[in-house]
Length: 262
Image 1 (cartoon, helix red, strand yellow):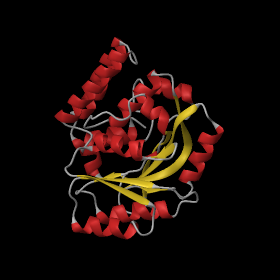
Image 2 (cartoon, rainbow, N blue to C red; image 1 turned 135 degrees about the horizontal axis):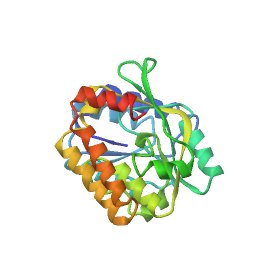
Image 3 (spheres, rainbow, N blue to C red; image 1 turned 45 degrees about the horizontal axis):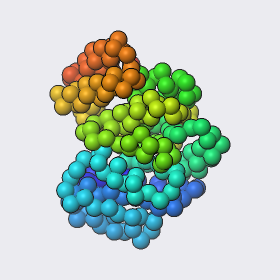
Image 4 (cartoon, one colour; image 1 turned 60 degrees about the vertical axis):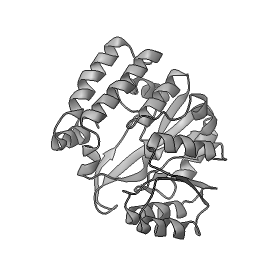
């Protein structure tokens, strides 16, 4: 888990509570502090450092999510690693179910799940983010869209390191990683049930648009083309379809994500 000064201390506290309530507790929690933080965030982290097996890594300056996750993964001592964002809530049985799945399916490198999105209270669900579960379906799906909900995944550390771990893209570090993983012959899957609750306000959809996001998207697609994960036809299809979404007004982009992409 990576966090920085703009994270909400109340949400971070709830994220830690969901980790505390896991039926299969984490043996360690690698927490990357990306730069200086507020006193409120420090208070939350200090409290939970007494309650959970947290190992905090501090970046002296804000270096971005990709760098922080790469650093955090190297610091993990376990073979199986779960990801989570600092403002999300994991289902109590999340770790147990994903651990059992990977134990029973040694050919799978990454397993994710569906997401329930909410804006205020976790009991008031706005929408669900569902994805295919079958590895072959996900391989095809990944050529058009991100095949995994990043905060839901549990993966085999060695497989992720084998393909170079996270790159330092500002956005879509996860999608780029999954593409490289699939292109190298590894397999991914999703458990077709909700194992994570995600806050999804207007700011979430705002972060998925704009010129910088579009430029980043093009670079990811260019690299997919370079390594042979997608064809030229697939590149141009993704360029025009995905690029169009990035330049839409925020309310239209939100509608597109909620009712067309799902």
